[in-house]
Length: 155
Image 1 (tube, rainbow, N blue to C red):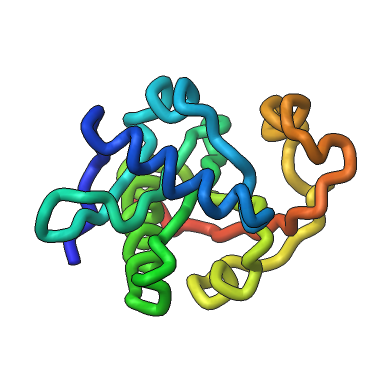
Image 2 (cartoon, helix red, strand yellow):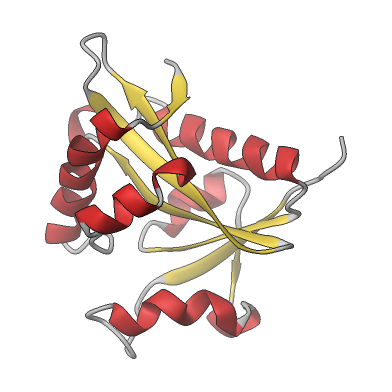
């Protein structure tokens, strides 16, 4: 399994994958334009034919904080280690950039806890991270859980 940076050719499949889970209420939807605009944040895992089986992004929020977002693995590939591989890629990128903390907002806390993330109160996160929340259909009644992972940098 190879984790790679996403390309323009991956965007429509990533959009479909993320929004398939969003349609089931398991994650928040992403607009096609948002994925294009933030393409450099995304990693993918492709099948042998080049199709996207999994995706996830590391989005920088501030000098000391980045968010894992839009993490999705095709239903036929759950429990394959793809989600963990994408998290590892995000952690390594944060480390290489010198970003000491990663957070996520999720409905799947157990998965992130197995990757080393710790539950925190959403109020512990800086206000800056709520910028995109204003356009969320669930705002202001967010029912996602916040988790953080401290990343040892400079190693």
